[in-house]
Image 1 (spheres, helix red, strand yellow):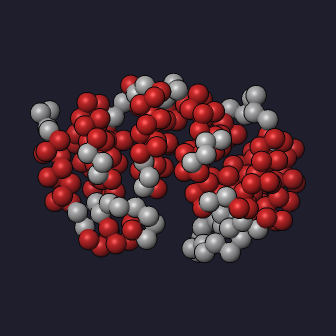
Image 2 (cartoon, rainbow, N blue to C red):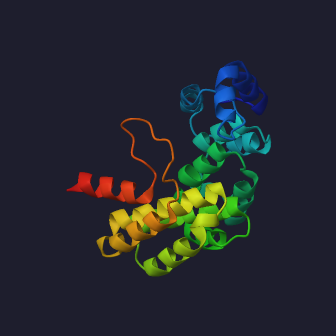
Length: 221
């Protein structure tokens, strides 16, 4: 498929459309109906095609944007280009994949983390928190963890859903990865009770931070 065009790909995506998948995805705020396994298989066949990825992103179609993320070269995007893309990515799955598969691999990730962290748009801010959580886990040097806990303690309870979820993830990772802050992280989670009653499937770990922290620490012993 060396000469594949956007028209070719959009036609193939249309053929993969599954109304049932779209219905399920819609419950999570996503507006695409292509099975992700089929999408990944298509991406594997297309291989890396950065120019095509840019064109697919420009369509605004959620399935096309997910495919674009899979076939792009993350390090080829400019800082401002990623900022625009993140602000356009309102569907949760597109937003999540863009942050995890592209921005985290970009040489601009730290600059964008700092720019997005306190953005007035809570969806954009959630990306800043996701990148901060990555730092908490892999490169905590120079991060002010007590200050992060201060912000979480003050703001997480009333934060919009997606921002709250990202802050809660950061809280859990601080407690899991940094024993010296574990007691405080658990205490914050217990007092705020964020996601305490979140429905959790059998065999899965609850996103309620005290439970999440305790379970991950137990497994690591």
